[in-house]
Image (cartoon, rainbow, N blue to C red; front, side):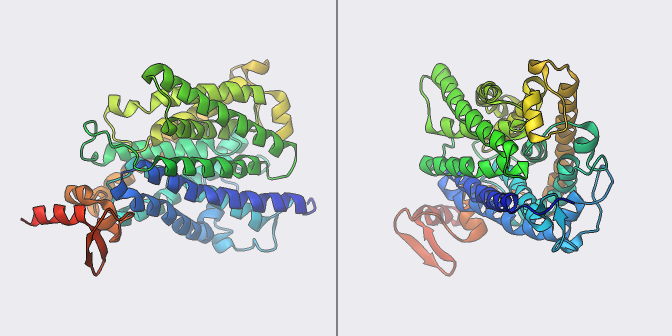
Length: 438
């Protein structure tokens, strides 16, 4: 067994903190995009994942994802993180590796929340997070991230599809679940009729900036060492994200006649999503190509919800599902032998570096297997919750504001309000309530 490396350990501790910051960053990003009467609920849905998934991870999540020899699901050897305090994973203490992976588990269900913003019960969301994380995320993390000398997950050790930091396990996984819930749950009142503009664009940009910052831990930390692999992933992350942001607003300028702040933030996130699986297998020139494709394709993809009539509130499908597919599949085209060697990835070069269609086929199998599994389970879970305890709030509560209805709070004071035992209700809420009671 190799000796513990203090440099690698320090890098993974820092990376874990960076990835943790991404969930509050996502809360700001999504929170700015919703209407003012829903911002607290949106932020709460994200912060709840910090609490719920942490508990699940300690109880059984780590064990199901990173132990055993079954290619489909882990074992129960590390329930309650049993045996991890003095254990070692490569050059790292096992607890450091576990903490790093826990942060991935936290943000993945949080990503789904954007697809159902403005209209869901907080308690129903908590139940969905518990079930989906347990049934979908933990097994998929085992498939994709668990390398065990040929006895690990079926995607990682058997198929040998490359996913350096979670394009399949995180983004395709969450995007497919978001698509399923968008089909299951009722649409927001005014969908396709009202514009439903973001209520706070500076908050959106702040959230995007925090995501960009934290993503260096997400991607470069996935090298699990402070070496050439981390350096490559770090550079590729910056390049692809910058290019995607510019590509998105270039499309906006050509199509709409102007570039927007929402567009540059969304383009940056699309680039971050797309480079996630590919950051350890392509070079910086490949990152330029990938970023340009991801920014342009995702810019067009966010309009799919109007064509196919599903209410994906904050474009989780167009950015995370489509961006994840773009990044995962382009590995089969853009992967280079030099990059693969630098990160010790298990895979073959793509077409650009003299490879054949083999790696592209592996990438497609991995991507669409995760997509199908997550979509089906999320659809069933969403339907079951909706038919039992109810997933969405009443139309009356949506009109009045999910923040007050679910949390007895409002994010902003718009003027004089009426005090109650639950807090201060804004005048707009009081007036609406008076009309209903009349």
